[in-house]
Image (cartoon, rainbow, N blue to C red):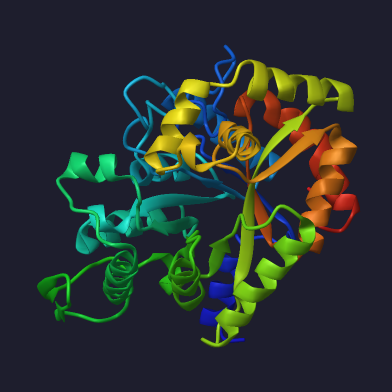
Length: 375
C-alpha cells in the first residue's frame, strides 16, 4: 500500500479500527430525530452541540452526521423548526474535537460547487482530515422554494448531482485553471487552493433510497446509508446488493444505517420511556405534516398501514428502533453488524443526557464482542 493509499484507507476507516462505527445523527436540529413533545427533548442549540461533541469525542464516538433542514415541515408543527447549517456547524465542531469524523450534509442543487468545495476544504483543514461529505439531492419542495430553486424530476436530480460531484472532485484535485462545460453549469478558469488535507479526498456518503439513488452512491461514494428492510435478513440482502453493485465500478463500499436508541438501566424502564416519548407524547401534528410533505395521505392507506407509518415517522422517518437495557441494545447492534453493516448513526431524545449510559455501558459490551477497540 502506497503512502497515499494508506492515508486514504485511514480516512475511510475514520482514523480507527472499529469494525462497527457508531455515530450521532441529527444533533444539529431541535428535537434531533425524535418527533416528541417531552420537555427534555434535544434543544439543537450551539452550546448543547458543543458540549455534545466534546463529550462524544472523549467517549470514542466515531462520527457526527447532521440533517440538512431549512425549515419545519408545515405551518403548525415545531419539529426541527430550529436548525444549524451543516457546513459551518461541522467546521465549528472540528475545531474543538480531536478524533471524530464530522460530516456536512449538502444539498447539491442549493450550493455552487466552487463555493461548496472551498467551504469543505476549509473545514477539512480545521479538522486535519476529519471532515466528511454527505451529499443529498433534496426532495422537500417547500425548502427549494425558499431558495428560488426549481426542483428537478427524480432522474434529473441525480444527473445534476453527478455533474456537481464531478466538479467538486476536480476542484479538490491537482487540476489548475480548468473549465467546466456541463449540462447544468458552465464555469471558467477554476482554481482552488488549498486542496483537501493530506492530499486525500474527504469521505463521501449518500443515502439515496431509490434504485437511481443507490446507483449514484455505489458509483461515487465511499459509504451508503441504507434503511431498507424491517428484518435483519432484508438488511443483509440490501447490504449485499449495494456492495455487489459497487464492485461493478471497482469500488469497495461500506454500508451504514440509522436508528433511534432508547437505552435505560432496565428493559422495563427503556420500554416505558419509549412509549412515553414516542406514543403518549409524540408530536403527532408534526408527524402528519411530515407525511403530507411526502405526499403520504390517510386516504391512500389502510388504518393499520397509517398507524405503522405514523409510528415510524415519530422516530424520525424510520430506521432501527433499539429499545432496552445495555445488554439488549449491544446485542441488537451486534446483530446489525452481523448483517454486514459497517456502522450506524444513532439518535437520542436528549443526546447529552443519554450518551453517558450508552457510552459507558453499551460500547464496552461491543468491545468485548470484538466490534470496537478498547479505549
